[in-house]
Length: 204
Ligand SMILES: [Zn+2]
View: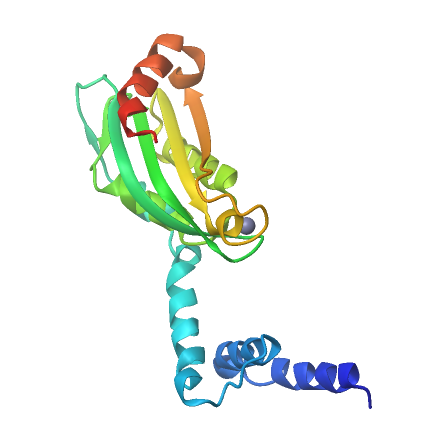
């Protein structure tokens, strides 16, 4: 049997073992494929740690944005609400490497507002999944629009991508900026400019 065939057999065996052990077995296999010896002292608990770490970093799949956004408060306030400089950490779906940075979110209420702490929690629901930055930005804005029904929503995200910094083009200082503008932020230049002026000091 060739080496390739025996590796394939090994892989099949690994994938057929019961679900509860799949995570750890898969990480052990990854370690072997990377040229490591999974049984050496320093790596013994690595499969378990990687499993726990990845389960946390993808816990957004098991959270429902509706649960965070369902409680709103009636107010007279009809001026922009802005939460800026929200730190976030996500994983790029192309390389499973982190991208991270800051997020700025604004909305113009239509008689209802959210508790301010709900906004960073919403960011985490979508950031703790495999993502591309563009989709993450849009999902946050659209979830706010769908559940809060404000007059407008804006979301700007600025991030460094380790897959660009550590590999590929190896650009250390490149940051990607993405934005989603809905409702009043799209239709009214005045509203959009007010938002951009307020977040400008935060943009790198
Ligand atoms: Zn990537």
